Amino acid sequence: MSGKLFLVPTPIGNLEDMTFRAVRILKEVDLILAEDTRTSAPLLKHFGIDKKVFSHHQHNEHKSVTEVIRFLKEGKQIALISDAGTPAISDPGFLLVREAIRNDIPLECLPGPTAFVPALVDSGLAADRFTFEGFLPVKKGRQTRMKELVNEPRTMIFYESPHRLLKTLEELAQYLGTDRQASVSRELSKMFEETVRGTLEEIKIHFETHTLKGEIVICVAGK
Image: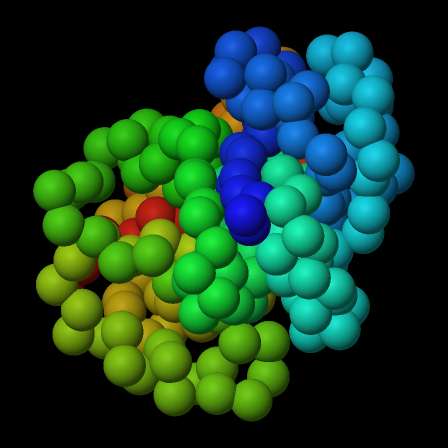
């Protein structure tokens, strides 16, 4: 009898966002796959979870998937967590889920934290229809993707790193217009959580004079 794969969301900042069910599952499984074992260690210790933890990240997931599937076929109960948020959303997980389905292995994804949801709601932009773009290409395909979004009617959501934010805001303004309404959220659920709203130009000017830290979510109004 095969085991089961659990995809367990972890807090994007505030540990109080961990669910009772997530803690229970992590305590019950045979082993845990973590994006970065150093990042997950404090979280697991905080909730008294003492399990074998193996690395499963973007640089080794192609190799580790085969071994994980073997463990699952042997009857192991395995949980996959990312550094923050829901696995497979701009994080490793898709390949493992696909292979589990191909091998008829039961899987269960727990509901939980995902950074773009509170960012979208906080933005004040239309949330009935939206497109999640994740991280834009850094180099190859970046301009092509920007051009494809020019006529996008839905609210657009992007993830970005602090050191690329200003460049991304400048390029979005170039392709979508400086007066396009947008918001930038950072440090969501943490002590210094901040959401800045306005036009792309106004937001860019704001962050030119402010120190940038933490994970960033950009929301931009559709055309």
